[in-house]
Image (cartoon, rainbow, N blue to C red; front, top):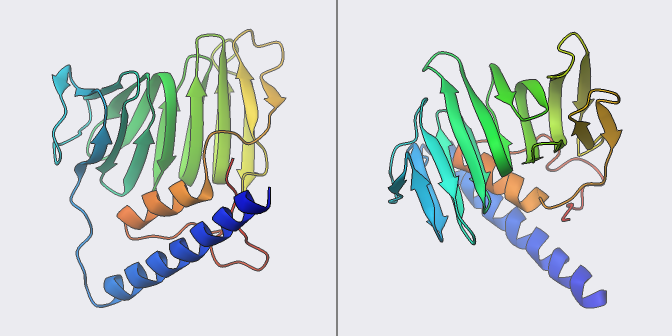
Length: 219
């Protein structure tokens, strides 16, 4: 446990130094990474074609990761980390975009403006947030890491609940049967370090970063 806490402490310091360097670079006009596939490992397909670094990801495209695959990509002011065995379809157009998380795991950070995320059990409307989703046919794990989201059950679209959080305050399972749309859940399988990384790719920092008492959450 001591070693784990030490490693977390070192990771936090490294992230602070990296973020400080990035903020300095942004202040003097350094360029952000271009849109498209920023980094990947293992089997990754875009529209059924093997991925290449820098490959564009646009509305209408589908990103698929196989066993052991992972992809980080940038679309406009949004950035995504897609884990293994996941299928994500980019919806909308250049003006209003969204996502369809067909299966698997996706961590996302979004700039200003409304977005719509479709999952197998619920539709999620978000505004300038960070969130993590794990989707299966009968249950979706949803952590609104920060920001505001309106969640509507697919079974009962009139059933809409609003979540507002500042730092992983209210993770939930979104059930398929509609009897109880939201069930409290723990925070799992995503970290503050990953959120900081994604936000840095689009020239931002998470709203929790630097606040009093922040020590980083890694689950």
